[in-house]
Amino acid sequence: MPIQQCSRALHSISAAGLWTAGDKIVGHRLVPTPAWLAQTWQELLDVAGLKRQPQLVTVLSAHGSVAMFLPGLFQANLVAIGLTDVRDLILKARAAGRLQDIPDWVAPFSEERVYSDVELSRAFARAILAHEIGHGILHARRAAKGGVAEEGDADRLAGQLEELLGVESEIGKLVFELVGCAEQFCSHPAPHVRVAAYHEGRQIEIRARRSREAQDAQARWRAVFAS
Ligand SMILES: [Zn+2]
Image (cartoon, rainbow, N blue to C red; front, side, top):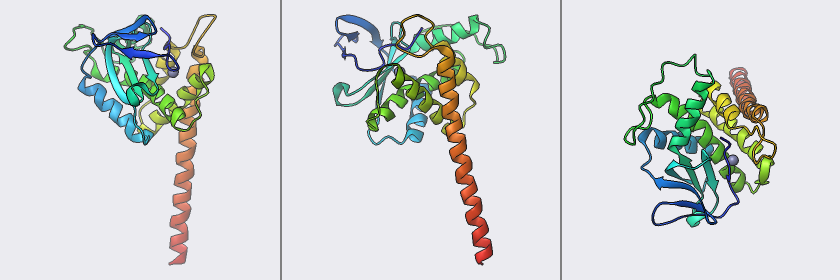
């Protein structure tokens, strides 16, 4: 289930809540954003530090896409995420035996409560949303290249944002592996390329933090010797 049509497609939301690209319906049913998702979104925005913050739109399903970045729609940049797509990604991971180390996941799906394991859902959605905010950062920097190259840059920024948040990296790596393109013609990089870009983003932030810590330590030593 690759994330498709992240950007550069004409999208609109009809009065009936249908999400369309051209004449194709790509999503439907705007749904209230669950509190855990709104909180995850806000945490990401806080570390991203964008002046012009994108707005989050939650749909029940984004029809083949987990999420999309929609630049300049209705004046604001929008990020849309499909709740059942996130659930399906978790089920895919579970079916592939990739969640064995994570506590029991029970999935009594209902519209009131999409997930029973909120923490797992948060972790999956966080990686996806971090990627979409990555698109927002690239657009703000006027560095959005479009195509597969931009997707790789957004994956790297997702790694940086998650490292800034201090969350563990296992779920992030798993998510980018699962959404990597395994087909011949791809709008997104292959699984191992996406995981590598995410990992690289985390390393960039780790190096930046160590450099800041070393500078702070030097400053403290200078203060000691100066006194
Ligand atoms: Zn993307």
